[in-house]
Length: 185
Image (tube, rainbow, N blue to C red; front, side, top):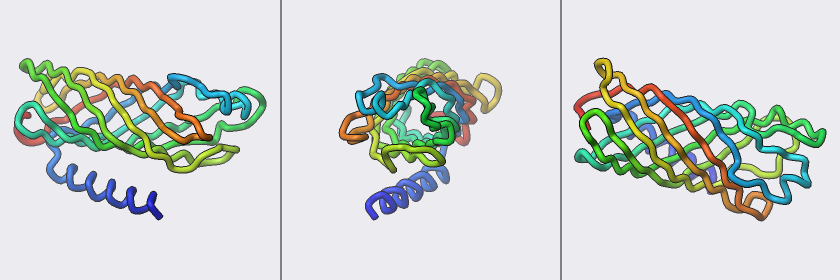
């Protein structure tokens, strides 16, 4: 029940941000665990690197602050290493972040952090359902390089507590195409 309520609120907030979005980002990247825990190894799970694809909306406040909502998809979240077939496990990530920008013309370094959710699904044996996650990261945006189009590079960490009684840490690096809607930040 709590998960559905949180997801409903997240969807409403995402739609509200999208309606006023100043920047739309399409991204692709690489997701890898920052550390594996003993339970993962015992279960034969190997969270080796996998692709991750996302769509984000950022609404800016002043020139420095922003609020970003992103949904990402990993088509092969878990891979088996000890004969367990986990190849059918996919995952959705949702995050809602406060963004702090340091604009220097079209070059904009930034930092962001916020709460989110991880929802694995699919075939195979997997030890957890929807989980709360905290993410933190930063990167650089190259704004309006060709009309409304720009580029973005992002490095992010995720901390997901209470997965088989341990915390799982993930690392993500991604790049994206940005489309600026409306006025500049």
